[in-house]
Amino acid sequence: MILFLILAIENDEDRQLMLRIFQEFYPVMKARAFKYTNSHENAEDIVQDAIVRLIAKVPELHRLNKYQIATYVYKTVSSTAIDNLRKNSKYVDIAELEHDAMDIDDGALPVEDEYERIESYENMAKHLSKLSPKEKDLLYYKYFLDFPDKEIAKIMGMEHGAVRTSLSRLRNKVKALLIKGGEIYGHSK
Image (cartoon, rainbow, N blue to C red):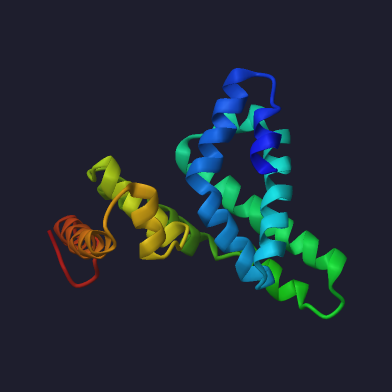
């Protein structure tokens, strides 16, 4: 059914984008939906509803890079699952699910702390820019999207063991970059 929805898109570029998103993210979308429902049938319905939402946002999706698309897809599935649970369940703690689906800021930081945090992010970005695209993808999938190693292996076309080994080496490389740059407390340049 989902493929029929995508194939019905008239514009070739839009259809190709949605096919690419479907092919790349379907397993992740279904796994995320299943976390909310514990039912394969309901997870499939949620993924279908999420695809419909994504099709409606194709013009915006064209302007996003692959990382932003991944985040958008992930959050769309989460919000679709929460909406579905709101409609179909009387006893689910929706507040807890929403907290899981979104980054909730529990208070503003003092100005000095906020500047320090921004500077820390800028320094981290400077060091991470030295990584290869494959290394950036590994970090993004593992630590930003919180994908399991098996899912990362599937997405990146790697063996499961190779993902674990690569992540271990990558953590050591990032640590070395941060130590070399004096970013880790107790280590200087």
